[in-house]
Length: 184
Image (cartoon, rainbow, N blue to C red; front, side, top):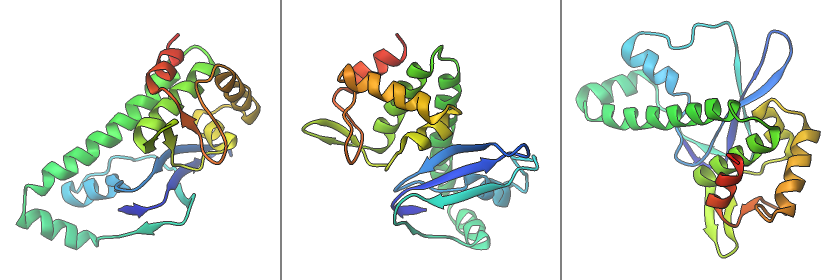
């Protein structure tokens, strides 16, 4: 469980391509697939891929031994409800990624990803919602399988339209306007 900071999970494919699959932040538990495998003696991912994890900031993590997890759930079956909620969050993230792939332009895809990040990792301030994850244009490009230059162009357009502000962090003055832009 992440209690402080941000961790990205990425994959280097057999062809050598690099892709960020998910970012975990405070309150996120990962990888939930290991908990599923431990509790149900069944693998979810059967591919040959190897996933890597990298801290994006200073991170504080807590771990639980597999046997302790099994014992805890056997002693308190209501923990399945909590694990189910975590799985729902991961499913939401996956569905958001699939929805992103259906958008027609790179510009829309960048806007859509920023909406998700603002909702999932944002903190409301006077100027709007500040995304707490320290995202670079390259990070966004790696998440969306785009080039850094394409993301930079989209970010400039979003700034010109006053849909985002950038500085030390990305802030979104109005999430609903940015969401509308991603589907326009």
